[in-house]
View 1 (cartoon, one colour):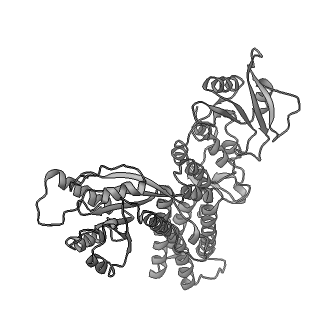
View 2 (view 1 turned 90 degrees about the vertical axis):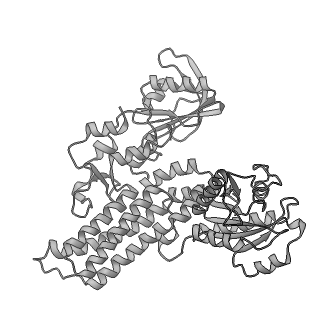
View 3 (view 1 turned 90 degrees about the horizontal axis):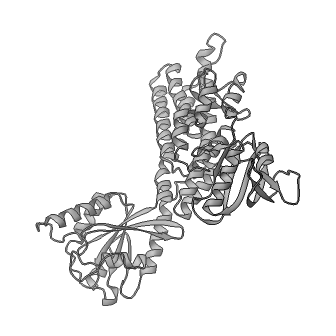
Length: 520
């Protein structure tokens, strides 16, 4: 039976949406008009949600395969019992929390020694899951790891589901949902930049930014709802001009988070760079030179590259995804063959999705034909992309007319030679600086202005929050009744709560944690 199945089985009838109160981090039903749990609701789901899984779980926390050591992680109320059954400490009989000690893992039924290990017991609730925890560091062979795992299961634990340790950490209030998702982001981040964002979220930066917005929104909504909930108690009406300004300010903070998504996507997945230009301009040679290995086929024959090639370059911890493309015809009127047309179309598609474009120009034989046409095409396909001109074959000497033309070009221009390596480091450095610049947010004084959002779920929910706040601003401007405006404010509160997990459904939790690995 899965973890959420235990919750469903034992939970008393209540709404299927949960809310984490500010008091004791309890999960409780969101039943008030604003979606804010009251003090009287505290603890309603303490047993049914936080303590519902009475079983103890176990999993191997290290990657599958052979290694120096493997870590077997155990969490749950029966950890002490399991320790008494399968752990025999060497040199001590006293169980001390948070002290790593040498021990034997034994078969609980036969007493046979299975493996010599290092083990550490951690008493709850100050553990990752909030429960008593045992971590066993055994020899990393497949057979020894499986034997230790089987011994713990035989002693009363059950195999953990995907992400169940982190799910328990979330449900016990140790972390919020953005921090839980950051755990997976940190594991999957391909570069240092991605790890930095994940660690920033794990430290609570996104949760704090959203929490501040949500707290201010709760205050606004409470004041607004008081005008019609207590209309007979001489509650003063709220100044609509002030109300509009406050709601619009919160909307702008949410929009700042949404706008950071591009920077977040680049940090998480990389900065996409398309290499384009005329046939035989030196695109593939430049591609190989930047990678410092012969990835693309290079010949003197124009049109060698017919398809796209993609590789990732790590520049100071930033993933720069380079794509070599088929050459663009200089003569726009020339009829293309089928294969050439497909290659050109694919290169156009690459440019459309690019964050930057390297426009490759043959510096040794430049006629100017096609350059401005290609430059205009780049601008039309990727209007927001950064443009860099790479003047290739610098070792053969650059045409004076080309240099004169480049003085009018507003983008970065670098002379390079794939043959001698001239300018390649300069181009790499230029790309790294431009990629870093693309990851910066707009700045500002609010916490939201310095946070980068990377998770598609968060981005979608924040966009919905912005939409709800925008409708509230329009309603206030149009003079709609307070209760209508309050409906949009409550919707914004709900979607903000879904980001951090303060209001969340079982289906969402299942979807998120099913993407985790077992043991995390």
